[in-house]
Length: 242
Image (cartoon, rainbow, N blue to C red; front, top):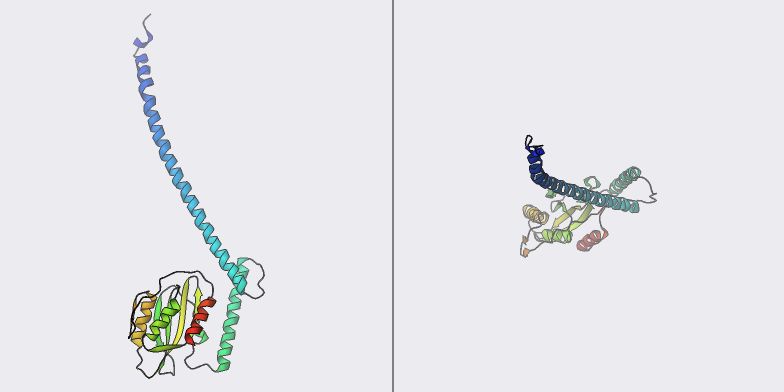
């Protein structure tokens, strides 16, 4: 009987296939497994990063909610929607009280009225406008990212044009600060344009070259998350207005 491999070369094909085909298949299989493993790792890392970012976001929200509860009188532990609704109503009551006080006092000349509530916006701002009925008083408005020494920089900008702050209101929310300052000049000529340029330098956190002051390096930016005006900033303004 003839050997089996002589019929149609079947045995030779088996011998060739057993030595070459499995190696190629194994190599490609390993490459595929490696690519799939790398993709799985990237997907796992992305999911982990997303979970961490979501955890930090929830922590910030819970921190702000805790701050709101501490600011409200007789605030009970309630759901977020009820707490925010109570905050809105409380702010409305405070604004109404401020309006009543302003009307009862007849309004101080050049005062920052309650309708110009200094809530910070998303856009940076540095403007100067005249106070009605006061020739030597203007209202300076600054809105920018909160940072250490911001009130000091605003005061330097005002004094660089030989003026002085006489009244100020400020609010800091979510790392943004808005200050509304009533500025008064003495006998000197009113330099509205110079004051506006100096305030823009404060907003942009650039070096301030004042009148007779030389170059003044403004404070470095340092964002902070607040809900409401920090007590230290209010005390700082009271000290500078004294």
